[in-house]
Amino acid sequence: MYVPAYSNVYSGPKKNPYQLATMLSIRSVDLAANFKVTAIDYYDNDGRLIRRYVDSPMTIGPLASRHIYLEEKDSRGGFGANFIVRWTADKTINTPIIECVMIGATGGQGISFVSPGQEIRE
Image (cartoon, rainbow, N blue to C red; front, side, top):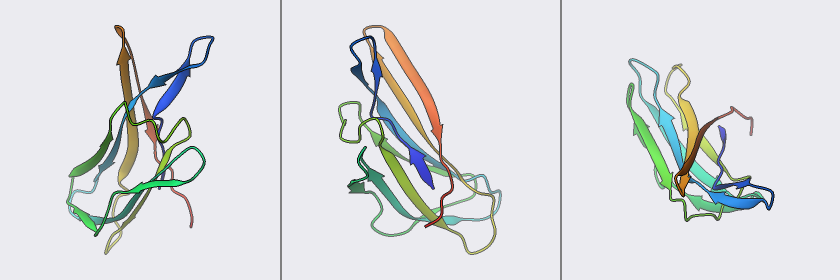
């Protein structure tokens, strides 16, 4: 799954970067079966790998969820950052919901939005 992530967005006429906290959310929507997350890789605006988050497969149970949190001050990803999440299951299951939630607040003004994951081929 390819999941767009935004460590910042631009605002105002001067295109000032507005820093955002980012949370990658991985949610099981299967009532009975587990699946395994085998990789969570974070890439920057230029497609360079910033960090790998999974050292060994992570099992996610029925209706369970996991998340990765990036603080507002972590701007390494830039506007075009993304996660690649690889997962597998022993049998056919409901496809997990994998998305990013971005949120920021400065000077009494806040912004939040969700970016859904998209299945891709390797």
